[in-house]
Image 1 (cartoon, helix red, strand yellow):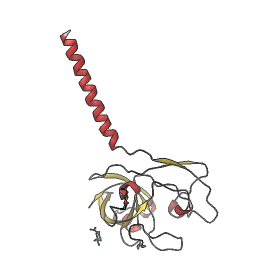
Image 2 (cartoon, helix red, strand yellow):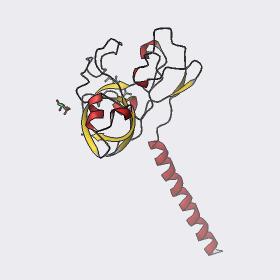
Image 3 (cartoon, helix red, strand yellow):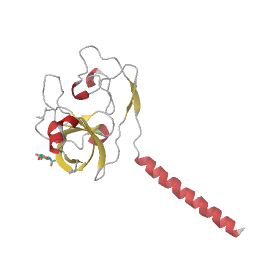
Image 4 (cartoon, helix red, strand yellow):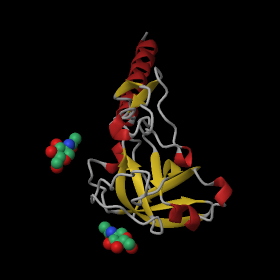
Length: 189
Ligand SMILES: *[C@@H]1O[C@H](CO)[C@@H](O)[C@H](O)[C@H]1NC(C)=O
Ligand SMILES: *[C@@H]1O[C@H](CO)[C@@H](O)[C@H](O)[C@H]1NC(C)=O
């Protein structure tokens, strides 16, 4: 009887420990904040340059206010965009309300990683292809909103995106034919 009781209490302790661990892990996870239903872009909207996809009418898109935790090798998906004042109506970067030359290493981060703009104008190191490049954070890739005229009818950003100027892609030594989407890691400088 005694051994049964001690075994039972050991088991109970283990279960308690396990649930505590799981709830700590759970707290670090980033869960969706909502969903947006795609609207049909009015004609002349949604630029498709650089494979940027346009919202599909009726499709549900997930939104996030958070991003995965940042570590010394935060996993992210690198995409390509221009930060220049071109003919295609790219708005000025949110961090400084300015455009940036694509000949400089600049990036936009998913909303959670921009951390309410506290990462603005900080530098991050992006690594891939056995190379690294330091880039300045100048803009947000909005994970909380999308599919409206303010976002040019683009879907909300995923929560793990680093949008980079072409200089970043060049510095990582990625062949031009493969520019646009790449698994990378990044960390704060
Ligand atoms: C973000 O920053 C603004 C201005 O500093 C502040 O008013 C707001 O409460 C902050 N939001 C969060 C979620 O921290
Ligand atoms: C980031 O790097 C740029 C270019 O080297 C530099 O001008 C800037 O001061 C750096 N920003 C910070 C916050 O260190």
